[in-house]
Length: 272
Image (tube, rainbow, N blue to C red):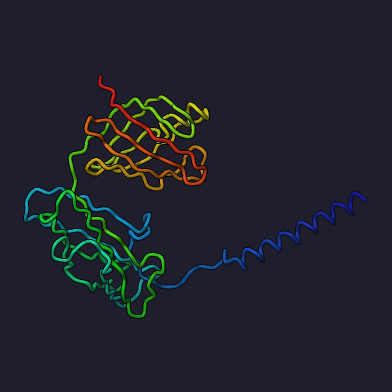
């Protein structure tokens, strides 16, 4: 009986294995995509948006930016010409905030991308302006246009002095009650920072877990947190907004999208 049982079990698992293999094949796990399509490279960023932060030094200043368009798939022996347009709903105004040097670009033969130049008329910008330029791929000849990455929004913003790096004492009020803690803010690049714990001590003091660092941007006192991963518990993201106050304190309102933990953290720089 033991031998028969083992044989039956072995046969059962063999059948299951074949079934799983068949399901995987039907699900497309063994399929290699061989199509061709064109896309904006930066359209894969959150909300299909990229922010260009500029420092104004004169009223006739012009800065040049590049937008990359990709050919996704195998390279071709002939060039691919792409026609790019501007969404009429864009708040950026041609000749005031930007200038397209050309709206038709070509990916060379045996290549996978081309960079399209855009002039930003920085000298015309005011600190209170927030123009957004949305580009769309209108035509690519015989090539398919990507469904998900055929639009790109460029947020054109002026910079202000920014110096947030340092140690801070924090008070967080939210779903975890009131928590006192300390965090460190590190500058990664101009206007982009990492805070050592976006929860302001909630994960540590309430849940007995590790700190959860997050990256945020700060532009003229406005703080933005976008889709930062929950590195401690996983499967969730942090989003939020904040403000640098006139007295140097910082106020950040944060939340997790799935578990709906949230808090408002007030940060006061520790002066040594």
